[in-house]
Image (cartoon, rainbow, N blue to C red; front, side, top):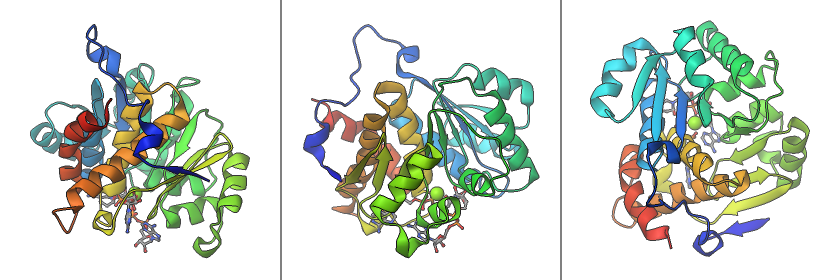
Length: 274
Ligand SMILES: NC(=O)C1=CN([C@@H]2O[C@H](COP(=O)(O)OP(=O)(O)OC[C@H]3O[C@@H](n4cnc5c(N)ncnc54)[C@H](O)[C@@H]3O)[C@@H](O)[C@H]2O)[C@@H](O)CC1
Ligand SMILES: Nc1ncnc2c1ncn2[C@@H]1O[C@H](COP(=O)(O)OP(=O)(O)O)[C@@H](O)[C@H]1O
Ligand SMILES: [Mg+2]
């Protein structure tokens, strides 16, 4: 297990070249937020914008659209059931996130299958939240590469069938390899299983135990994947940035509010960049 501290990452933070424009920093598509869990989509998109993605689009239930425009005007937003628009976006994006607050009903299942059917070969796909539960039902045709899953322990239990008490690194790694997945297994000192290696994030705190914190992580990971060419490094950097920013907030605050974490990201990134 490789322990990840600030030092490990010092040379891999995304730099902003002088000769650049929004296209340089990646297009992120986040498919998230049903009628009940609209906030999850907004939190994920907020984290993508504040971690520095060039262009962020949220595909969500139409009931959430005006809230997205009001709370995050930097993001574009579409109705996730508009197949033509969704297809156009999936075909022309640097990374796709699917799952935060998506739900597991028929609408969610059909959007998930549509995404799996249409994502171009080699576009990175991050599967989080409800979409992990859909994947765990094993009723989806699924071979896409590269795919990243970001389960908490209960979601990993559902997907891997390894009980939480038995989720040991060697057992987890075997399953990650078998399923051909990069796995960000979330808990205190989150572990990352990627390309036959295991990394452990030496940051984070109990102030993070609040709804929406994982949705925020997926947004950060999507940006890092756009900007850091090595996928394992992108996952390590994004997960560390999330927990490290939370630690800075926890020095003065008892609870780390997810959207406040996102708002702190530009300053933390500036600190971490060489
Ligand atoms: N504002 C919103 O709209 C929010 C929407 N959310 C979405 O709601 C959907 C359901 O997700 P949930 O995670 O709430 O529900 P789940 O039913 O998947 O899991 C939650 C339960 O798992 C158990 N658990 C065990 N180990 C855990 C660990 N290490 N971390 C977290 N939980 C652990 C806990 O008992 C917890 O109550 C997801 O799509 C999620 O993205 C949540 O992100 C909360 C905020
Ligand atoms: N006690 C804790 N210590 C460190 N990190 C934590 C703790 N509790 C939660 N987290 C972090 O918060 C996030 C929670 O993710 P998740 O359960 O998916 O949240 P949600 O779905 O509500 O957005 C993960 O990144 C996890 O590592
Ligand atoms: Mg979650």
